[in-house]
Image (cartoon, rainbow, N blue to C red):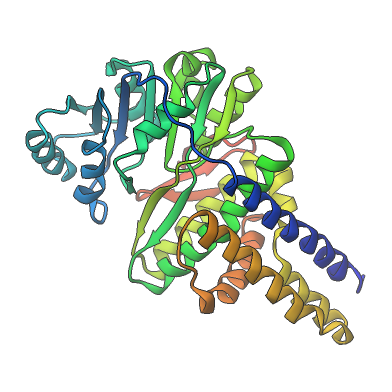
Length: 370
């Protein structure tokens, strides 16, 4: 039994080396130049005033692209985001834009309900679905158009660098997002190709969404982005990790809200891909080294080796691929925190999302808790 942590550590070393190779392989891919510029519909589901919402939304009006529209959706006209949208729509009158008032969602996933309403109102086949806390440069749509020159491509998921708020917990979470989370995606891409979608910005063809059953098929899943890419890949459509990196502004949060968010994340991940979640134990070289040394102190040299290897992988993914500064002092703290949250993810079947409690089912679906 004492050797089990060391075996897990060895597996984590292999994974960490793979993450460096995967990051370098992704970094070597260069974005294409667009041959065509098909019209694009940008879909933005909103709920309340995220931090810097106006600055985030403004970047989608300022796209250097010949023909696009921007659609927004809120539940009620009393939503404070309405004033921001109306102000921007008036300021950028040259950009076709529209605000939809959807009413209360007809099913558990309110974001999917908003996306469904906007897709029905959109005029174009190529759509970009982007969260309210996303910020982009003016060349986003040109890059998306270039990638969709490939007629076999159905879904493209944009990697992202997390931009933290001022709080310690926000900076800690951003450190994990920019290292662990992205590394896992890059390794999966290298080993088996993209068979899922993730993140705050996803592009897809309307025809592909319809072919997998539309949003009606996604409505009961918490991780609707993941299953959107999964269903598209299973249907034979191309799914890629885009070369375009967006910014994900996660804002500031206190310990309570940050804990609720991370528990929602790990519990959702465990149900979206249970085997992959179990395998995350191999993505944690430093905690595994600590356990191995605790079981056998003579193994102490593996701990500094794990820290060095982890630092190399974190720098490669965060700095080289995502161009995100790395919080070096937070890295070991995040490693321990991520391990604790991973363990916590095996327990409990409820989450809190936008102030409401939901119950998760084993297949990744969820519903309001009674």
